[in-house]
Figure 1 (cartoon, rainbow, N blue to C red):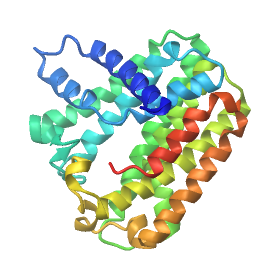
Figure 2 (cartoon, helix red, strand yellow):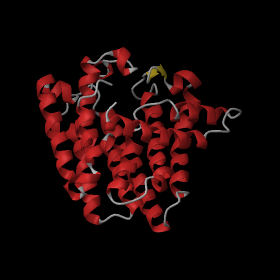
Figure 3 (tube, rainbow, N blue to C red):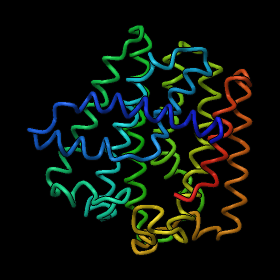
Length: 290
């Protein structure tokens, strides 16, 4: 196994061990069980890993940033529950398992998503970091939570009607990139990094996020359902304009390469010795199959 994959697994296990602690006493509480089901359902743990690695890149201690990193993952988990609801994308499978509303019912899934967002802010507020850094992290998380809702609103408004590239980019700068950007910036804030490093983190996150979304659109169109662990073709069924429908497969691949290169270039604001993993992460996600 390469050094990259070993480090990815180490960071993922750090995040999952902390998440396990949050929900260790959840068996007798139906709401906590539903929260745990989604928070511990696996996945890439991409957002908390970005927080940890940007903290390291800015000269901080990853362990001290772990609660902030997990707060980003809890926001992500809540957003997936709501995204799968019948009033949204109406998906019954997520990561190879029944989605939260399929497993627990629609009303409990809705409340579990709401409660996971509250849990995220609690964990960020209780981070073992200087108070001024906690304030910045909490503000970043709040802005991301709002922007994700705005992006989902734009996405829902665009169903069954064609939209142009500018509108599609605007939608995913909010829906997809907002939490990725917050995760990167939260890592810099956790380390007490500079304004220049925050700007570099934002540049990386936007390019990384758009490349990630384009790849997601390609996989939804032509990916393998078993590998993905969720149904494919949902965008087409919902009449959504995607990067795949706008560009086609070859142009999507070119765009992914371009945005990935921009993400790597943005890391010039940090020491090259501390950004090897982040460079590799952008490149691996651009070529992922799930």
